[in-house]
Length: 240
Image 1 (tube, rainbow, N blue to C red):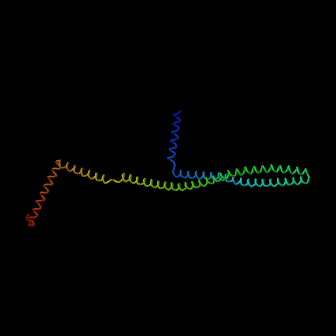
Image 2 (cartoon, rainbow, N blue to C red; image 1 turned 180 degrees about the vertical axis):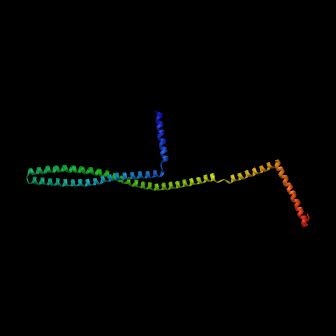
Image 3 (tube, helix red, strand yellow; image 1 turned 90 degrees about the vertical axis):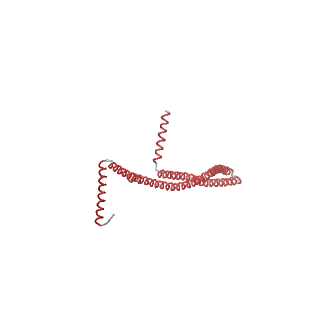
C-alpha cells in the first residue's frame, strides 16, 4: 500500500513537472494577470456590498431618529392632554390620555433602543467600509504593479526568444560550414598527401628497370643536345 502511494505521488509530480515545462511562459503570464483581475473584481464586488450596507444603515438611522422624535412629541402631547383633563376634572379623559402617553413612552423607548443598536451597527459598518475601500485601493495598486511586471516579463520573454533564434541560426551556420565547407587544414592535408604519393611513385619508378632505362635515355638525349649545340657554334664561328 505504501509503495503504491509513493508511486502515485511520483506519477503526479512527474506529470506536474512535465506540464510545467510544456507551458508557454506567455500564456502563464496572461493567466496570472487574468486571475489577478478576476480577484480584483471579486474584491470590488464584496467591498461594494459592505459600503452599500453602511449606506442602508444611514437610511435606517435617519428613519429611526424620525420615529424617536415623533414618539417623543406624541408622548409629550398625550401628557399635556392628560394634565388638561385632570385640571378640568375629567378623570376618564385624564386616564385615557395617561394610558396613551404610557403607550407612546414604550414606543419611544423601543425606538431609542433601535436607534442605539443601529448606531452601533453603523460604527462597525463604517470601520468595515473603510477597510474594504483600503483593500480595494491596495489591490488596485497591486494590479498596476502586476501589469507593469507583465510588460517587463513579456519584454524579457521576447528578448529570450530573439536570443534563442540567433543562437539557433549561429548553430545552424556552424553546422553547415562544418558539413559542407572544407577547412584549410583538411585542404593542406590533401595536398601533402598527393605530393607524398607523387614522390613515392617517382621513387618507385627510379628503382625499376624501366626507370633506369628512362634515366639513361634522358642522359643520352642531354649529351646529344650538347653535341648539337657545339656543332651550331662551329657553324657560327663561335668558340667555347
